[in-house]
Length: 326
Ligand SMILES: Cc1cc2nc3c(=O)[nH]c(=O)nc-3n(C[C@H](O)[C@H](O)[C@H](O)COP(=O)(O)OP(=O)(O)OC[C@H]3O[C@@H](n4cnc5c(N)ncnc54)[C@H](O)[C@@H]3O)c2cc1C
Image (cartoon, rainbow, N blue to C red):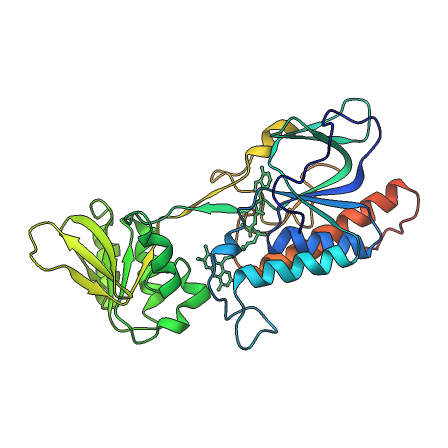
């Protein structure tokens, strides 16, 4: 992958398209899209600001084809190498703004350093930002590394079966995640970040599933000896959990839509089918930034599909496509 700051000399807008396709995002979705586009013999460039969530996954055990598991960082590095082998250019640069260039069939991507690329098609694979649990400086990443702090029960609930699990969250999202984790452990406690915001019906459902609700106010979380300490108001000894799952949601990185005159959904996500149905002619999406399941395997699948749709749309413009080629 091109090292940090590898932007082109000169900056400034260019008159002709710099490439056929610009992929924004170098996570599993964007890098898979780039691999496919490069193998379709498209001039493809990937821009990223180094914030793939996959880089924070110490080990993923549910990526098809990796029975021993693979770290997110290694997967990203392998995908980048695979795309570059076929000519994809991967560059570290933050995209500040996208726009359609009037009276041309091109899009413009303006970078944070003032540079700009003009391209024929776009794939937005910009991911989401996780709302993190508040732990003291340095403790957060260490807790993720030891497995005491996890963010995705779908990803690794299996690895925590039989353990003492806490879910941090005050609302229905937290309650649903706690119920989901009962598949893996009999010992699940919901710890509200603020106060419990559940209806009596939702409380009854949790009780029926033997999920405890902690009613005392949360004061502090700490990582000690590979476990999570939960300090509560009025309690001398902290509660100790093997694993804490914050259920605090995430923020889609969909702000680039605005420059194209587009909006996200109520949660600011791109539509779930944006890998197949263009957001506008020549613009597709893939991965976590779409509504739906945030997983590596869905991100790679959507990246492949978006790349294929974009390639065929470009071919159509070149007069080379048949109607049923997807
Ligand atoms: C701790 C943790 C563990 C996880 N474990 C697993 C697991 O075991 N299995 C699993 O399937 N999933 C796991 N996930 C989820 C997985 O990481 C995501 O589903 C996956 O990374 C989504 O890929 P993506 O390409 O859509 O987004 P990301 O990987 O987040 O990539 C987004 C890309 O967009 C770039 N970007 C965004 N905006 C801009 C901009 N304006 N300019 C330039 N670049 C931009 C970022 O720099 C980044 O390169 C885990 C997540 C976390 C946080």
